[in-house]
Length: 499
Image (cartoon, rainbow, N blue to C red; front, side, top):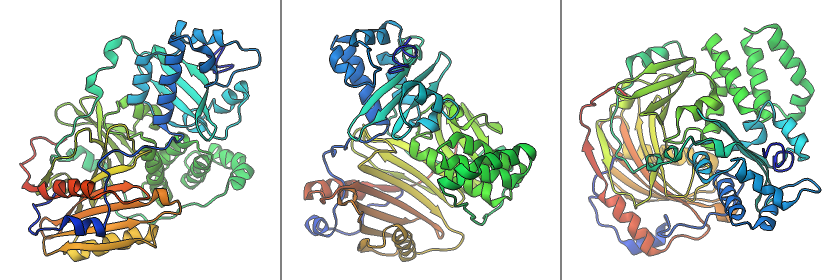
């Protein structure tokens, strides 16, 4: 198998605008998303590694072995002809690659191989810096890929059993493709609300700050402390932060969940879980449509499960829930203080996004629900265009100007040199253009945002964000303006279930 050869070698809530806007003046005032998809620069991410695997496989099946060998880190004396074992022994196949693309989570070598990563690197003669890959398990096999990023491209050094992942061609079908969907209201299951009753309403953040030198110096002592006192919550939190620093994210998560289960009022556990969940989100662990096996393979066994109506079910990890519908991830929920009203909007958004845009991420917490849409070929970890749909529920009445001011204040924390201009504003709606500069001009973010008031204490927000040094052309701006103008605010039908 390649692990013996290549492993040793390769081994929306807006009414139609009540005013008329000048497209030319809007173009001058603010850029927004390009009409044509921008070229995504190659980065060490999931999309690039999947493309690398596809190219590598094509070279092998076309017997272009010398070219394939250049895409791999091979041991001295390894002949290119030996690469054919990758296909003969079903280490790699188009169907297996498709399963990785659809369901697997990309990460660093220590994130994906926390127990075996060091040994795999030593066996392959590769250092840990800039090494990434997949470790994905389903009912058929565990497929593994490791590759080294050289600054421009991936060099493969481990491929194992990826071709064993599909049991037959039916494992890869069109049902994996996510179609654009309407945002519909839903209720939280009563059992899930009960599961969060013991959680603190607003834990005070108390992040732990430690350097890698601290970790190297003290890791053994911290591990011994947890072993000596398994129910010492503070010791577990410290060890979890150390594991997080070492990029052993799954181990950090499990320690934090254990800590929360022991003491739900331990602020370090709550803050830590939220930080790690955010890291998982950026890795694509919670991408809409992934199967339960992907989530469970990284987060571990849930502390409890809840049956939702229909074909829905929920994995609960302390206060963090992952909801599935028909065997695919639907959304995540922070249960602390989150009440049924967050699943019962008075109004919903209807609008038409360009073809190919799909929901990539959904999350609900005590005051916000959010859905992120991306164009085909882009991921939560590597995008240049993003559409946001958010609903905010405040504890008191709020006006449109107040909502806009809160947004600006929040953005200024991350972008102190931001530029913002209110283009339209009245009692029920506002359109704001933002430019969010970055140290790298190519990473500048341009936004067009609309706010809409829905009830005394509810605000809906839609936004298109594009990452680009140059502002989009007038034609593109007009395209998105029409989409924003056509968005409608409609009353939500009574929820038919409690998913």
